[in-house]
Image (tube, rainbow, N blue to C red; front, top):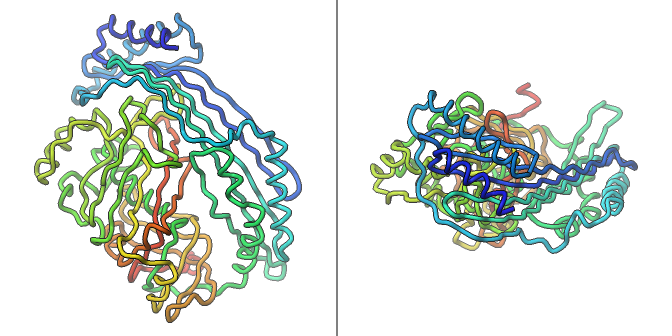
Length: 496
């Protein structure tokens, strides 16, 4: 593989490239879907190929092929150089890359039990057992369950001298129960709060899906008779299974520097978080700190090196409420808008990328993507029960569901899976038809209490979409339960 990589790098150098890299990668995806007492589908797909990227006269060029052999690699390098020459005509400014160290390394995500080595029949039987356990609950009518497995192996080599091999495994088992009231012709669903993780089959076994199924089914049934919420200003206690998605949309996407400077405006939008706000905007209350971290065990975006060959790290995006940094790549670090904003804010000069590049396939070009971003736990000991006991009137929300947010990632609306009313410091009845509405800055500034690190947990997504052509990337967002004061609550049924 190293010899094949050198074919691309030597061809790029000979063609005049100031920088070049090649990613040879194999992607394997397995999916099992079931419904009630039958397996609906099983798929097992594998893709193998390479992509060559070159920087010539300040312009990027890229080409890829599934033919991993010397002639095809040399041909792709020539195509990438031709693409760079063509792209030069459309340059607004030449691409410059911040310095990066050379690494000779191998990195693997921790896996105790290879999920692909577990027989498909065993996985299907587990999912069917989950369905059967859920259907024993009166009123539970339908169950859909699935298991997604992904392995990403890649070899990265660059003209900077890096040769990096990485092997990443991710898994996601989950299920949804549908309850029906035949008299009213109504239905309600409840999806289990089991989210994807970079791990092996031990994540599936540790999720306790069969034992969890009756609880999830009972909650789906209870939603049928739950009280419809009264809209108005309420205090919210958001569980990590709900809060992770709010973090993703209102913190993750706004801090992507390419989006801030308009490079995603045509598709994914821009960001309210313009460079003049760096080091000046109170993004949240002083309790709120957001840390980006591509090194945390189990994180869906965790890896040893990003797809620019940058060693991954952790850093603050928001520290004690103050907005202090963006997610960056080597190209972005040298952008004048970023450097000038850091200087104006009195922040030290950035000298290297934060390692936020990712490509979802050997046939995709790497660019800046969401990393793992976490709300730090509260520094004062605080349990969820104590948080509830100190809330006189509020709503507890668990699980993620539908959402809407504008193209600047500012005004938003989020819902959830289950909702409970809090009165006099106690959880009382279940509610339904709940959504909360705010803007990013007001919302995070309304945070007045965060549980401590004992109650911190990660949520995640397999599919964060961005780019043209669109690419999908995985990432995780952790949080403990937290309280938000005086947030606008909507009744989704009445609003419709």
